[in-house]
Length: 76
Image (cartoon, rainbow, N blue to C red; front, side):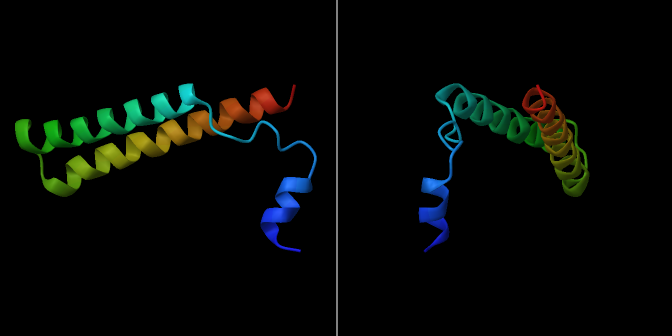
């Protein structure tokens, strides 16, 4: 038995697909993070690694927030 067939037969996997709203939100956040990186690097004249660090740090913080929200929603 493969991992794919186990995942399909396991109960509770009906809602694991990413919704179109979530896809739109993820795409929007990605575009905004790339825009912030380019703005910080080119317009604010920050060093390349500083601008990249700001964008990556913001993405990490948003991931932590999303994880906490998902954990709180799942514990109900």
